[in-house]
Length: 103
Image (cartoon, rainbow, N blue to C red; front, side, top):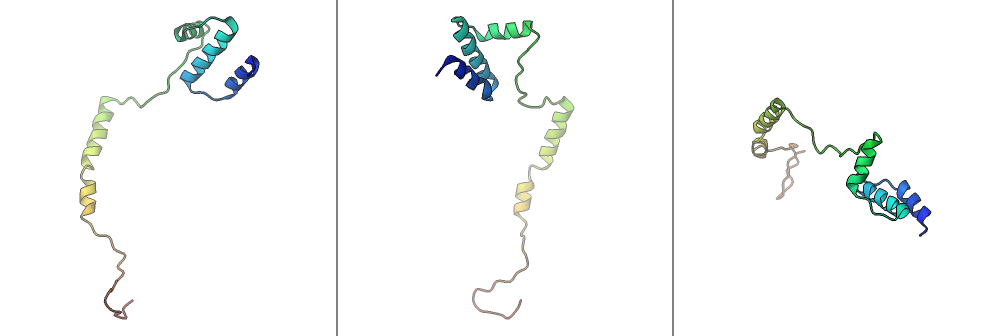
C-alpha cells in the first residue's frame, strides 16, 4: 500500500484514543524515520495547547450520594424473594380431565 494512501485510510477510520496515538506515531515515524514515544507526542500536543482526554469510566459520587444509593439498594435487596412468593394468574381455568362447560 502506498504511504499516502495508508495515512488517508488511517485518517478516515474512527479509532479509539490509544489506537489513534499509535496511528499518529506510525505516521510521524514514516515521515521522520525516527520512532517517537507516546509521552513525547502528549508533551508536544500540550505545548501546542492540545491535550488528550481519557473517557470517564464512571460518575464520581459524593459521600452522601453513595450513602443514598446504598440505602436504596438495601431497601430493595429482598424484592426478588418477596415477589417469588406471589402467584400471578390471569384467572383462566384449565381442566385437564374433562370439560366443565365453564368459560
